Image 1 (tube, one colour):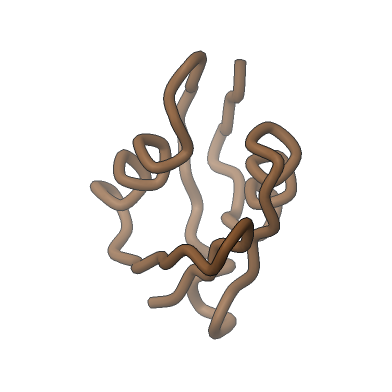
Image 2: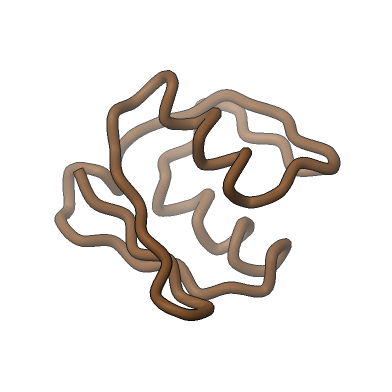
Length: 71
């Protein structure tokens, strides 16, 4: 399971990248500092990102196996 306890997005991203076998990058510094508290077990990556978006406004887009996150 993936568990985040008030962790910044820049620390969460590498865990998500390993778990879902993708590359995650950021456009802009502010979104890296967003903090999240959450636990996930079997959700798909898109579900995880959409759930995180409910607490902090950000956008993401797929570019092959790369996900770009922006404000």
